[in-house]
Length: 335
Ligand SMILES: O=c1ccn([C@@H]2O[C@H](COP(=O)(O)OP(=O)(O)O[C@H]3O[C@H](CO)[C@H](O)[C@H](O)[C@H]3O)[C@@H](O)[C@H]2O)c(=O)[nH]1
Image (cartoon, rainbow, N blue to C red; front, top):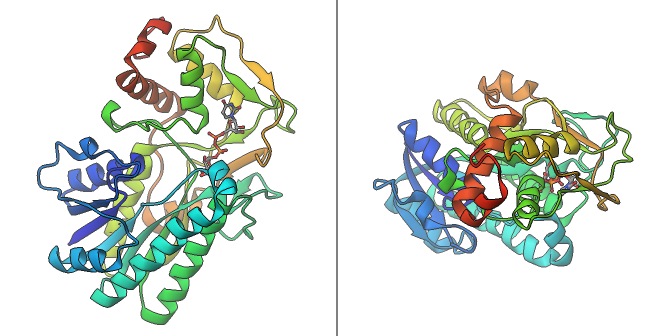
């Protein structure tokens, strides 16, 4: 089977393309290169990279036909909650409009298998700490809303057409399988702390008065290499021909506090001389967000293999690759 990976030149997309390729799958990547970087796929000579947007329905249909694609892994999307509050229509156009276009192209060409990148942002603030897929979702941002609408759109299409799908709700993706594949955006805790260290400033912690053991927020950090292996498992499951209509969390089932992440970063970079600066809470941040990892274990037999230290070490190697000037601030370059 040949799989199309949309957003294949992005941070998560490129990890998925490499993992599928290493697992022996035939892969075609599609990316509009708005944030994707073609070099991430440069060493994969037998993986064509088509430059184009998922909104271009006829282009996508042509790619599906020409490469005899039998399944799609749809990762192309905008993913910054804060930006989505400023630009809701942009997020609806990119994430909801993009998916609608892709589903139309798939319907036209008879492609009936889909893995969809959803997010823990669909949950929003919940009363429980460990989130199961049956929770009633209350997204806090247009970004989370577009991911939830995407899940609904896919479920509706599946009811009408028999589409087989697995929607994967990623928790906090971080780390890199190889430095070249690292996230180049600075929108999440780990790269934001690296940016502070590079500027010779102490890390910031947004709030230490949450109802948690150390007062800081708790998240479920999952190594992007594990997220990629979850896609390999999802693709194999869909390829086996079984009926599949699943929404699955992709997380470790373990929570780590912001303070613990910051301390691990200071250890890995050898900067334990620095004291994090505590600011007020960032609006909209839930206190605790931890995946229940039960359902994905049962359905796909998948569980995460990497711990927080592996995440932070690999993320730091990626940061140094993209920001060589940061070497001067670390006492243990490379961790
Ligand atoms: O310099 C910083 C940066 C972040 N934080 C805190 O660290 C925690 C994690 O923040 P991130 O921005 O890394 O991640 P979020 O949990 O806020 O959101 C991420 O995970 C969500 C799913 O859980 C969504 O997928 C979302 O798109 C993605 O950015 C938050 O409490 C945040 O306030 C700090 O204390 N200091």
